Length: 113
Image (cartoon, rainbow, N blue to C red; front, side):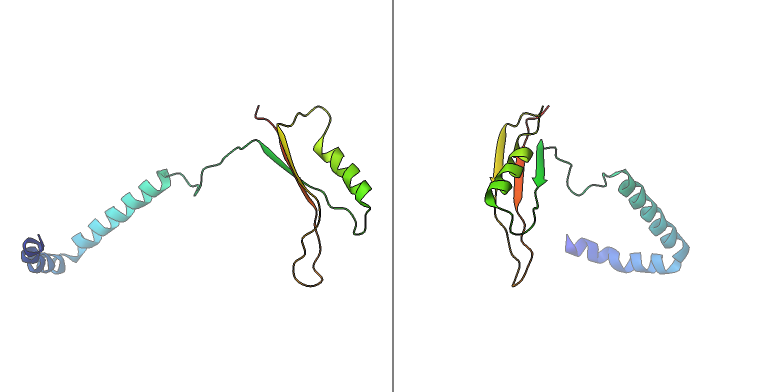
């Protein structure tokens, strides 16, 4: 196949150099076609996914008693009128480097509607 294309190369170059306007018009037409195709493509990199998940973060002042933390977390885990299929919870803090701020996190999963 390369040998067949090799025979077209020199005549093609001569034709292109003799007709720069035609080459420019073809390039412009292909650019316009590419823009039209691009505008019709979906603009999202990843599709949106509804996993039926709600995540709640509970941040209390540093030094809050564990009993109060558990009480506040219970309010977040069992809101009135909402049923949860499963609850994932984590108490504690994560420190970034020396002297970083800690965070407690709770995650909740509600059933899909």
